[in-house]
Image 1 (cartoon, rainbow, N blue to C red):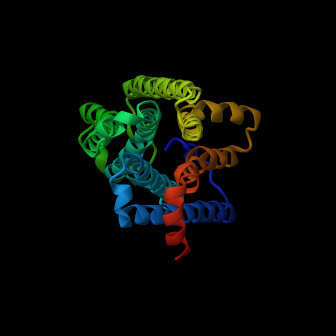
Image 2 (cartoon, one colour):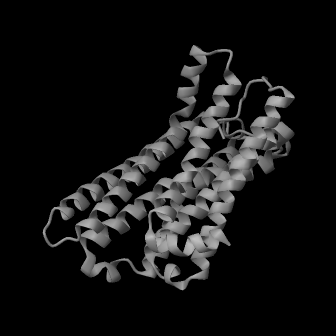
Length: 298
């Protein structure tokens, strides 16, 4: 939620109205798209028994929750400006959880594609439904570690009545202890290094497999392109963490455009990447597209 301005600068009513309407319309569009995908997944058992689509729908649901929370935080910052710290804590922790889940789910999806191409004969034994659910449980546990540790540190250092106070709902204003910032930097570096190395390894192995004579070149090429798109998603996820520094640099260049810069960053960093998950599987996957297009048309 660091995209929200901490300075006492406010938009005009017309500008605030336009920005919030655009944000809500984008949220509605993506919610409709994601909702039809979830409906398609639940309606057809062939998807709920395939690890590939289970991981995909987990990404869709995670993105939908994240987008809803971020849009809510954005609108709340205009409508109420200050909210009770306890309510802000719930919103921010859930937003952080879903943000941390994204790269970890990407790693799981890349590994699944690697197994499908490089160990096709053993795929049914390696990628079972039970192991897929265990992987998602591990992702949830790892994603929850940063926000839970934020809360524990804050409970230890803040006054007992802090969560009853009214604040501008922002992560840095809610979890104010400097140690939280450095702890989260360590978490982010560890998570993203692991995911980056996973994507590089799976991509290289898939490329090598595609050159083998016995490999289905079309499937390998599609898997390679999928991993590349996951890499693009990871880069967009990383923008979330470099955005404060990027904003500071842009504000030095354009000091009078603080609100416009932060709104554009909100769209580019938090909104646009949410379109990638539907594109990767909803449009590119022929089997899912066939069923999903029927649902979407209805």
